[in-house]
Length: 136
Image (spheres, helix red, strand yellow):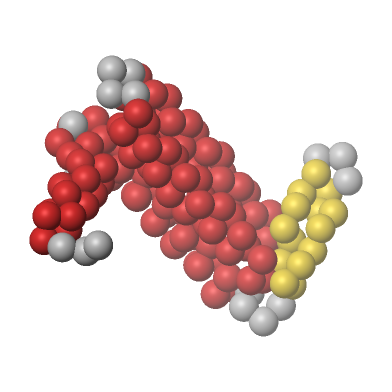
């Protein structure tokens, strides 16, 4: 049954999950850096898309064979969507770990969020390489 007491418990529980982890400075730094990387990926993908909007774009380049995959320009947005997905996945995993592993929370948060940074840097490199293959 929904009453005032249950509502307050739910509010306190949600605050514990989503607000309290941000009292740690390292989470704020990770979050800011990941948001900046994600915005850079989205911005460069959007810039590349606007350069060749109606046409096809080279989406894959191999050293042995050269350009081996062409596709519509809007397929470049798969990369920023993946970056956003991994960002949300790792942050939600961090919040879940906050619930169950209170002693090891910081260690696991560093591992998850540094993995998200590595993934975002790799995806930023992918978008940069697509831009360079098509326009340089």
